[in-house]
Length: 311
Image 1 (spheres, rainbow, N blue to C red):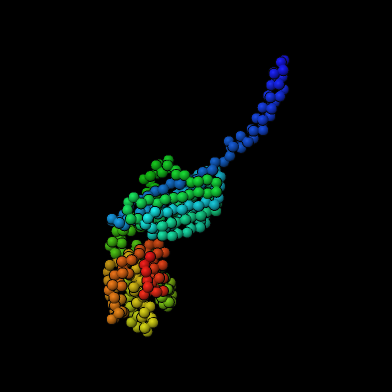
Image 2 (cartoon, rainbow, N blue to C red):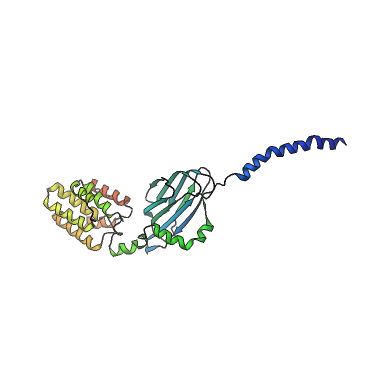
């Protein structure tokens, strides 16, 4: 046997075999390592509204579609223009997401998302034009979220229906109802009315609303404020007048109720009645849907009506 053959047979070949055996466990680990994957689908419903103001339901479903748990998951749904009027986060397996919202951003954080677990963000967007679409950022410590194009194409039609059902079916009628002057099927109405009386310091009325099983309408609230203002001292009268003017900041009040609110303001205001102030308040009105923006405006007006600047 030549020297070269001996070198290959006794040195190089054993070294290669030993190397393969040392790599085999690592290759096995790589081949059998559980898959890490985070996918999402986005469904947008039809836009309803008129030029300059449209409402649309958007449903975003994020799924741990891999075989390993994902940690510190973060999802952010953002509008480049316009804002969200309301939202709901639906989750599986008892997850407890931490949700933060602003006018144009909904952020969801989840500590751990196990395989096959999912959550869905259903949001009602108020947008200025039909080209405006939401932006989604989704990631965990292990992987970035990616769009599940196959699943979206497969369930395209059904997901639109599902999104509408997830949004209580009422979102689709939002614009029609608002134009007719009805509140959005009473959603958040009692909460806003209760909050208004509470912020005015009229705790006797807010306590009654809290204990009552009967719904309180904006019309009823306006008449309660008028009745209380006419019978009490000047301090209570001023609070009731503030409350009536705060009702003008809500844009989904029925037209018939709005006329009553304005008439009650005239009655309580007397010689200090200002048509220009009422016009300004109505111009900057906000939907009570979701309630966060309208609460902020109520707070600002009650705190300082003279320098009130709508946001």
